[in-house]
Amino acid sequence: MSAQQDRFVHDRLPRAAQWPQLRYQGPEFQFAQQLNLVEELLDKAQARGFGQRPLLRSGRITLSYEDVGDRVDRICRVLTEDLGLVPGNRVLLRGGNSIGLALAWLAVVKAGLIAVATMPLLRARELGDIIDKAQPVVALCDIKLLEELELARRERPSLAQVVAFNALNEPGSLAVRSARKSGDFTACATAADDIAMMAFTSGTTGKPKAAVHTHRDVLAACEAWPRHVLRALPDDIVVGSPPLAFTFGLGGLLVFPMWAGASVYFPDAPYTPETLVRTINEVGATICYTAPTFYRQMAPFAREHGVGRLRISVSAGEGLPDATRQLWKQASGLEMLDGIGATEMFHIFISSAGADVRPGAIGKVVPGYIAKVVDDDGNELPRGSIGKLAVTGPTGCRYMDDPRQASYVKDGWNYPGDAFVQDEDGYFFYQARADDMIITAGYNVGGPEVEDALLRHPAVAECGVIGKPDEERGMIVKAFCVLKPGHAGDAAMTRALQDHVKASIAPFKYPREIEFVANLPRTETGKLQRFKLRQA
Image (cartoon, rainbow, N blue to C red):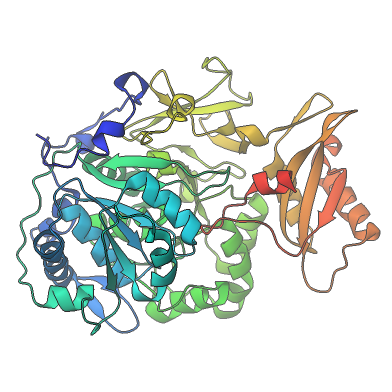
C-alpha cells in the first residue's frame, strides 16, 4: 500500500500500456511489497555487521554506517517536523559530490520523499526548467551554489523554501537544524513501487527528460550488475568523478557501495585527471568510476605515479574506444570494466569483467536482463547484423509526463537508442547512437569506430565524429579533432589523419572532412554532445 500522500508524480506517469515489461526472475529479485530503499541499505547495515565500518569518507572526516544512520535520521526530522514535508513531496538537491549531499539524498528517500538531484553546473534557466517540471516543495542546496538557485526560484512560488547544507554554523542551515534533533527516525513505510527519485537525463540530444525510479527499481539494480559483474567487497574504498545527480554516479558512488558494505571517498574539490590518480594512491582506493575521456587523460599520471591498490576501473557514461582501453591498461596494468546503462534503466545492463572481456565488445547482458538487436519493426536480427538495441529486465523507463515515452518503450521493451551488433557468443559491440549512424554512399559507418581509429594517432587528444549531409554521397564522415600540444591543425595533419584511418579500418570510413577545434562540447558527466557538433 502506497505511503505517498502527494500523488503529483504518480498521477503523471505513463499510462499502463506504455510501461516497460519488468522481469523479476531469480531469487535475488524477489522483494517485499512494502520496502524502503534506505532502510534496506542503511538501517539494516547493523544486522549485516557493518555498523562500525566506514561508509562516507573525506579529507576531514570518516563516518561509519552507524554515524551516517544517526545523521540521516536527524535530517529526516528536519524535513518532516520543521519543514512539514509529507511522503511524495519532491525535494530538489543541488550540490557537488560530498558527504553533505549524500546524507541529504539518503534522508529525503528514507522520509518517503522524492529526490530530484541536479547537476552542480546547471544555470538558473536550466534549474528553472527542472523546477517547472518536478514542482519541488523544498530545495536542499550546497551553500556555495545558492546564487543560481535563488535566481531560478524568483518567479516560482511552488519552491517555498531553500535550506543550505555544507554550511556548518550558518543560522538556519541543515547542520544547525539537524543538530537540535534526536536520531532514531523510523523509515517511511513506503511501498516497493512508491517513487524514490526523479533523474533528469543528461541532455546529449537536447531537452532533458525526467525518468522516475521506485524503491524497488534501485534495489533491483543492486542485485544485477553489482552482484554479478562488479562484485565489490566490504573492504573496498570507492572513488570517482560522476556526479551523484547522474545515475551512473549515484549507483557507483553511493548506492552500490552501501549494498556491498563498502565505503566511498568524496574529495574537497572536483577531480582533475591528476588529482584523481593522486587520490587513488593517497586513500588506497580499490574501485574507480569515471568516463572514458577522463581515463584517457589520467593515463600519463597513472604511468608516472602508479595506481596503488586499485583493482577495478569502471568505465561508462559514453562509448569506450578500444584505444582508450589499451592506453589505460598499459598505464595501470588494469583491464577496464566497461558497461552500458541508461538513466532510464538506472544503471548498467550490458557489461563484462576480467577474463570475460573481449576486445572491442562492451560485454554480455547482465544477469536479470535480456537484450537483443532488432530491426525497425522490433524483429530480432541475425547475429552479426547492425540494429537497434532492445532491453528488458527488473528496471525500465517511465518518464514523467513526456510524450517521448512512446518512442523509448515499445511492446514492453526499452529502446535506449543505441545501434549494436551481437556476435554468436552473445557479446555486444557498440556501433553508435541509433541516430548517429552515418550512411555514406550506401555504407553504414559508426562514428565511435572512426573516433577509435583517430585516437590511436599520437597527435589526437580527443575527437568527435558525425555525419554531414552531402548531395553526392547522402552523408560524409566528418571529424572534429582536438590535437595534443605541439601539433598544428593544418592540411598536412588532415592528410596524415585521413591516411591513418584508411590504414586502420575500411578505407570508405575515413573522415572526408576534418575540423580542428580547441575543445569538444560535453555534458557535465563527460558525454560528447554530437547534436551540438551537427548544429555547428
